[in-house]
Length: 188
Image (cartoon, rainbow, N blue to C red; front, top):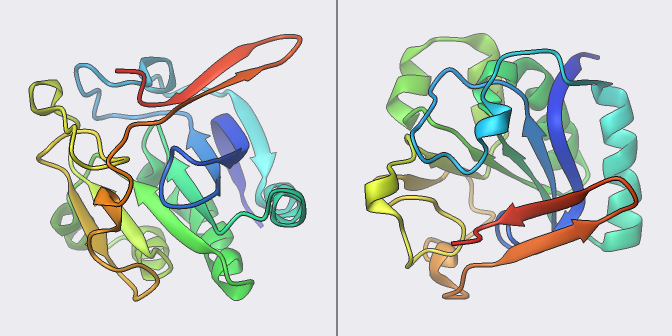
């Protein structure tokens, strides 16, 4: 098993992809897109270090309690932690969950890297939303895609093309605890 450096986690969300999902935000991104909705997750620094085995146990709990259909990997930049995320993706597929990855890299850039961990993660990804976020091209038509330049790649048959237009709405979720108020989704 590997370790991941996380920025945040939601056990159940409906604003980070189709259906109910567990969302993992990883810490660190070299892309630094202007207007990024997660600027605090860009710095490459130690944040919340978690064993993938422990994350898998959390996902199992969320499957039972929240009846999630998949996991979403967001950032920061998930491809910087592809080794650990690929372990989770392989396991997720083995239990019938889908995998959605948001990345600032294009699919073509990822393939040309010839990186074993990235290739393994792509192999076990159902939906890939790729490309840098461009603030001037903010996308208001697709449900969970940031900017119009970003593409949705259907890397398996788990979802049909067009699902990203299904709800025609932007969702924002607020989680209030004793310590924090956490917001995810698109507050625009």
